[in-house]
Image (cartoon, rainbow, N blue to C red; front, side):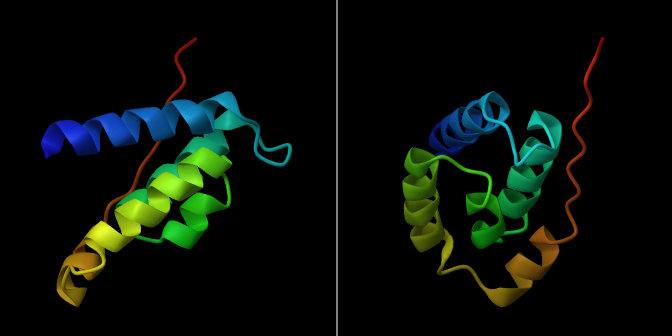
Length: 86
């Protein structure tokens, strides 16, 4: 299960970083996507996703939809920061 989730996150991250987000660049798109994913705010993650990634997020949302509310509250405390090394 961890391999599936890791693979899903890696594919999504690649998809997000390869596209531009309304002129804000790939870093902000990646941050928005990952924060949305980790906070279980799938609508936010879908805003910067490709059509294929949106479909994957829909299935992920259904799978995670059975989680208890307290788990979702804990997930909202996670903060994602993207660092670009030059």
